[in-house]
Each structure stands twice: as C-alpha cells, then as structure tokens.
Length: 335
Ligand code: ATP
Ligand code: MG
Image 1 (cartoon, rainbow, N blue to C red):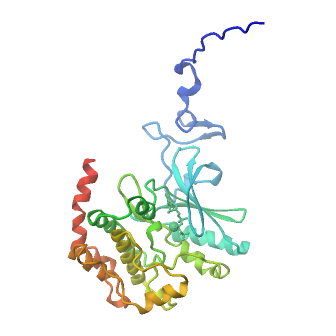
Image 2 (image 1 turned 90 degrees about the horizontal axis):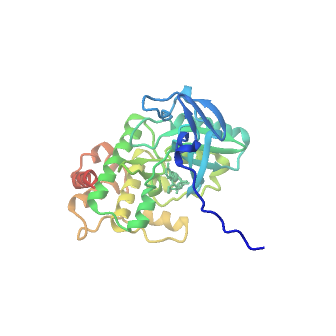
Image 3 (image 1 turned 120 degrees about the vertical axis):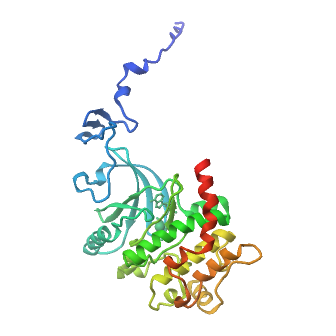
C-alpha cells in the first residue's frame, strides 16, 4: 500500500500554550501562587512580580534541600564536590558544596551546627553561606553562586594575570581579610586560588572560610585530610602557633603565582620536601626586572618568613600597588 504523504506539520502558536504562564524555571505563576512539577506553594511576590530572592538568615523563607534542583557539577575539591543548583520556587542559583566525611554521626551533626554558626558572615567580600544541611550522613552547604568560578580556574585560562587586574583582585581580597581578621577576629586558614571566587560583576570574594578549619579539626578526618599545604606559612606548616599573619603569607604566594604563572616553589615530591623548602629556604620574591617596584614591595610585605615582619591586611590595603587597579575599574565600566 503506498504510504500517504504526511501533511504539513504546524507548530501550535506560542500564545495558545500554557508556556505563556510559565516562568523560565518551569513554574506556573498567578500572583503569590506558584505551581511547578513539585507541587504548589505560596511565595510572596515583589512589586515587579518576581519571587523575592532568598536572603541569608531569612527565617520566614528558609532554604530547604528538597527545593534545590541539581543542574551540574561545577567543581571538585579535596573535601567534596560543588554543584550548581536552582531553587525551585524563586529560580535563584546557588552553589551546593557536598562534603562526605567518614566520621561518627553525632560529630557530623555537631559539625553542621558549627558550620551554620561560623559561616554566617555578612560581608560583600566573603562568599555568603545561606544554609547548611545534614542529610543521610552528608553535609551540604548552600553558598552564593559565583558564576566566574575561582581564581584557580581563571589562572588556568589566562596563565598569568597582569598587575593592574591583580591589584583589583587583591584590593577586594584584602577587604575580605580585613573583615575576617579585624571584625570577626578569625583566621581563614586556607587561602588559595580555588578559595577566591569571581562573578560577572567583577566582584571577588573569599570562600570556604570555616570549612577547612572544621574539617581539619575533626580528629577522625585529620589523618586523611589531603588539603593542599602549598600556601601554608612556615609557622603553620611546621605545626607552630599561627595567626592572622599566616593568611597574609598565603595571600602573597597567591598573588605571586598569579603574576608569574607558576607556583613560587618548584614542585616537590612530598610534604616533607615542601616543609623543608618553606621553612629553610629564603622566602620567594617577585623578580624586579619583570614587575613594578610597587608590586615587588607588596609581595615582600606579605612573604616574610617571620610572621611579625609581615604587614596586616589593613596596612597592606593602603599600599601603592593597589592604586594600579584604577585602570581595571575603568575597563570593567566600559566593556
Ligand atoms: P578544598 O576542598 O580544599 O576547599 P577546593 O577549594 O579546590 O579544595 P572546592 O571548595 O570544593 O575545592 O571548590 C572546587 C571548585 O568548585 C572551585 O575551584 C570552583 O571552580 C568551584 N566552586 C566552589 N565554590 C563555588 C561557588 N560558591 N560558586 C561557584 N563555583 C564554586
Ligand atoms: Mg574551596
């Protein structure tokens, strides 16, 4: 039997579908009433008709893990993975850091509680932590999503960062450190390129403050903790008392690595070789034939083997090198 030629297919007109009621996140909206594949909910709408974004510490509008749709894995670290997730009801994006620890149930619960307290910081130069969850033996932390990724990702793409950009980045990291050191009176302990995040507005923020401290202080985890020791100050890597100035050493190494494109110490085979290099060898510096005197002296104010010889975040923040960031601000505004 001859096949009948198919008739011309016509797409239904856009207006006649329910699509016109759907927001981008697949939610049907009528005033405060929101309906999507997960059910129905009343979410107060702002004047513009959008669901207001969830704010940290918002008790009336608490973030629940069931309300987060996983989109993709965006990163992997020593302590776990980071996923991009979207809130079903507001369409808001978050980065969900998922940490699986091989420790007792009760300690894990206590850690989630501690994280909740220690991570709630309110500073535009520190990545916001919205909520911590503890489900089925896994700790998940909903963080502000930084769509530019980390300085480590950026460095992989560009290889080296020019001084003017570094100054703009450094200025913001210092503001974050000033907040942590001088206002909150805490040490970050794990400042490194992957813990400095960037977004499309050119904002730079410090992340993972508190996470590493808690993971490394949980005794069961300490033996297996494989976090990088690369950026640790001599006093810290050798197990002595460390303080705010240990973060300043790390900042100096990060900035020097970004400028030269190479980690300031040659690759080492083991932890002990690194320890020996950091403790016994002269501290790294910026080559004066390649970089401005302002940058070189900024680096040397950070990378001093004796912690007392390093400058504080506050003192560093008025250094001449940072004024080179003017160009960067201009660039951001006009492109
Ligand atoms: P560690 O486990 O020692 O902290 P790490 O910093 O490399 O190591 P993660 O903190 O898990 O590991 O981060 C891994 C990667 O995930 C980062 O390099 C970055 O690309 C991405 N990432 C982390 N947090 C966010 C965030 N809030 N927004 C966007 N991307 C993020
Ligand atoms: Mg990190």
